[in-house]
Amino acid sequence: MQESMMSADDNNNDAQTGANDPGIAIADKTELEQPKMYKVLMHNDDYSTMEFVIHALMKFFNKNYDEAHAVMLNIHNDGIGLCGLYTYEVAESKSAKVNRYSKGKGHPLKTSIEPCD
Image (cartoon, rainbow, N blue to C red; front, side, top):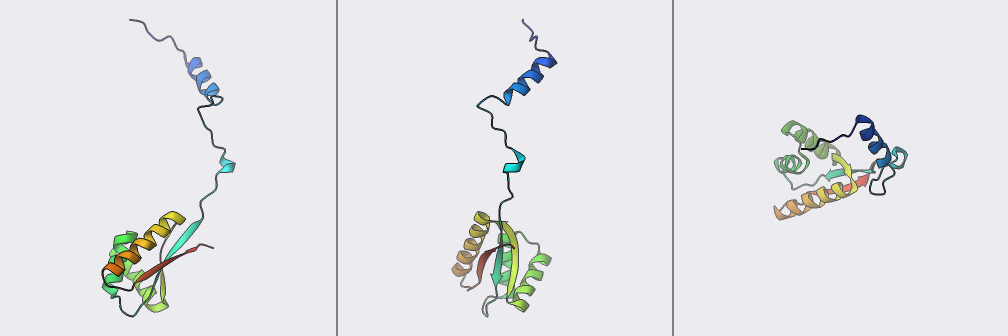
């Protein structure tokens, strides 16, 4: 049986020369930017029940009951409420799912997205 004769120096050399290997990509921290975030907003209507709004907030935005109730009250009192902040693709997907789900359940509840300031 033959044992590997690789020393700690050999491991360090491999790690250092690996950066020059064309198969390894190294990201420069200055190149990375935080993705732009978008607000998902839920709009008040005269027909969707408070219970349904709370249900939708819990189902699609992972709110607990108290958080969902607080957002529902904002929607009811202010006409609009913030459901969450997400990247564009996630915000668009969540908004579309809520709108489709609400329509399927016979509620006119609507959500929209807008860029964060």
